[in-house]
Length: 475
Image (cartoon, rainbow, N blue to C red; front, side, top):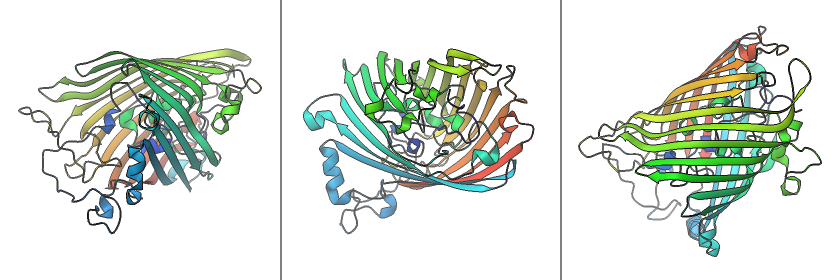
């Protein structure tokens, strides 16, 4: 059995394909619902005029070039080569995130640490390249450096930094092919995949650093950062009309992580290899999404609810001795925009996109106040976290002139197992607050404060007060 993925310094993360997806809106082209891309990709709106930026090129010395501070990607358009490649069906993206954080008070040790992560990816549109409609191939390389610190200093179980890792990595992180069929109502995705890019994610929570904002810590050996796995994923849209979308999804993953196998380091020749493990991970999810519940009032917009379950066939050690063959759990998430500052009941929400201070990709996420919630359950006989209850509030574009900024507050309760032999003294609660400043469409800086009550349920660790700053650049 693998050491529990929820002990201090174990790595979990927040968000979608590679962690950079939590930092920029132009990461992996995962389809969460088949009818359209993720809601965060839709243009923002503003009731006030936005200064025009002349030119559409991103290369120095050209008469029609934007100023560097308005470039969507720090490396520009490569003198037109980048656009030529995209027209031919090949899209390149890269992101770099650096983070310093430290325990300011309490915890296990009052010290700081530095970590960084870099991803580079290629997306291939098969219709443009070879005339095959609905096909997408994706490759992503990931580098992360490891420095002692983080949760070792805080003593927390939920892992307060979602890019923390206990070892340096240089890996092919994702490698998959996806095909849309039946008028895009059926989606099949096969290859090495981060399961959190498809299951138990919360779109609006992507800017938080705390790992539990990404997925519930109740999911044992989840094939996510730093160990995605070979998989087969199938999604079908049952309803897609009048702003309402209902999708069913199922994923079958290599579950070797439960046996201590680092699936993130494995290549195609060792996918589903029975020589090291014969464990598998099954996950299913139903998702209901909507555009707007009360259109005249502009309320409850861009919402989604999910309910899912998982089953791992591996062998897990019980706290009271012995083992258990296979274990299961379930999860639920909900998120919705409850306030739209740009809504005009007379004309609806304007369609003007706020480009000047948006994020990488050109369009800022929709402005407004969002609320979200998470729940997870697992077998307390084998899982350190028996239940997970969490929620938060995010304000995107707090001012019309700062549509790319966001701020948020998140609280996460990990109900630690009280099974005989578990050894926990109470539960752990983490509180996370941040303000993200979008310096340019391609760069941000994000100061963040966290407070962890009863870290890891260990009476020897004081409540931890953590401060940090994260910066990111899209290339």
